[in-house]
Length: 335
Image (cartoon, rainbow, N blue to C red; front, side, top):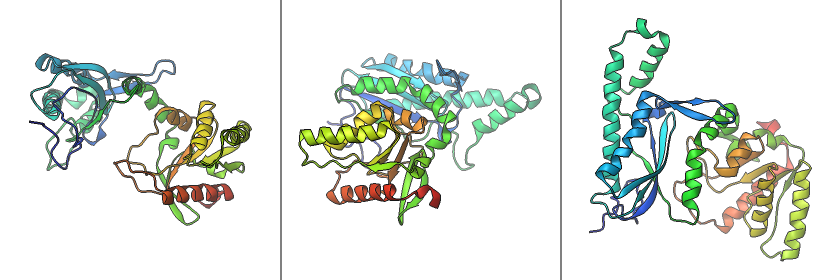
């Protein structure tokens, strides 16, 4: 019988979680407590130094394949407050994947409770203030809740697209560098609410780009032929190379081509997007790097939705109008 996910869960309802697939799994610590490791700030090789608990969490992953030989761990990265790992289910497994993840979490939680028990027996006089601070962090939970290492829910992503696996492996291994950049440029990774021409929007990135005197809206119709698109591309990229900020939702194929070149050259962009930003959101890929370099601002007038929706004509018009408003005035002075 097909074991799909029950309603009201984070699992994909269409997927059979006992069948062969490749998944990227993300578990976060309860209340995002950074107790699994510490970032070592090395510009050439940023990496995570694991705590004893983090080492156990890392090693415990290997026990999954001893119980379920159909599962292989392809890649992993333990971070201070979460862990990413990619698993390959090569053959049908006897239980829903969530049962296996729950077993892994239970094993880690047992070690967590044992760790708390052992360390709480040591006196503050032996370890000093740093130990006291660590213990407060470890045991900080709501009085009515059990102490848990990981949050109750977890996120999975089914990897099936072309080059998606390698992209996710690269993303996992790049996590320490991304965390270092986020620490160094934390102001660029804050989600803010601002007002633009009476429209409340969410923004993340370098808000000072709104104050640039040199901004230009990128428009390229789907009706433009190749010669027209090439001329527009040359025009906008020439502007961007001279420090002009390109502003657009970059929707049409021509606009996307202009955005691609601008991204490759690390030119300044204000991009209007059709979804809000969830808590702890960070731009991905090249957008992350541009954000850390103060060359990107993402703007959205929409509330965040966890599911993707098709872009409507009305939304396109609203996003282009917002881009026009941004180019017309220096909104930074009004914040």
